[in-house]
Image (cartoon, rainbow, N blue to C red; front, top):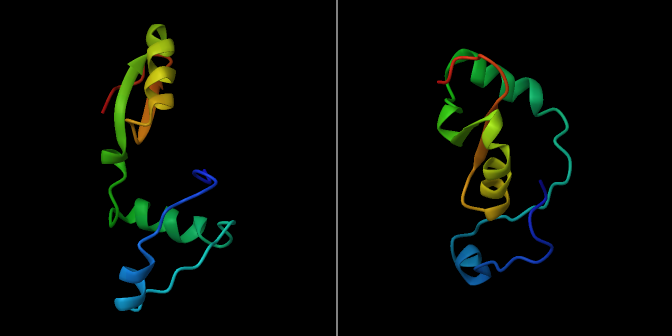
Amino acid sequence: GLGRPLASLPIVNAAVREIDIRGVFRYANCYPAALSLIASGRIDVKPLITHRYKINESVQAFEMAESGQAIKVMIQCGNEVQH
């Protein structure tokens, strides 16, 4: 996602620490590297799933996603094993 249209940045802090800030809209050439890192186990993305719901709890799942309190909300649609 893109996030909010306006963001507040600690620009003085960034300048003092000599941090470069660059906006990027596309994810060109990132997917192969990201998939490789995940497949190799160097990056564990499982903690990013913060909330899990069953299919009959879909309304609550969407409410949680909309609330901004979750990173990733998953809805179990069948008999998959929950991790």
